[in-house]
Image (cartoon, rainbow, N blue to C red; front, side, top):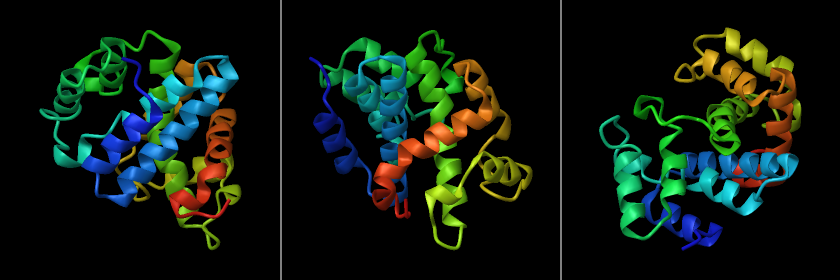
Length: 187
């Protein structure tokens, strides 16, 4: 079985009531698709991973449940083991190696997508285009802003990807612009 975007989206819609969490998964999907295109990889499989990676989070946001319970549910539905391992790789505490470009990219964009969206939400016009690397760096210094985001992970993700941090921020931001309205933002 080859998972499709439609299959992943159906699962997300059926299990996630939080619009914020759905937006997060859509943003990671968009960033993964953009990086797949840049790297000459399979856009569909990268996008599906970005969309499905947190699909079970709302029903069990604890370390003992997420993402293992969701992975088991996907396994029972016949999802391929490589996709399940890719999902597991985004959870540091599972110690699944990030030994592929796809896994490294998921880790690099996951938290950054949320941080960029948070930066745009506090702009007067709620515009993604008003967010640049300078904005993100400034907000990273404000420990009260989006306090759940580990700043060192944002930087380490770009480093692991081999992309300068400022370039990474602006690449991810640009990937989100086409879906800005879905994210509750202006382009």
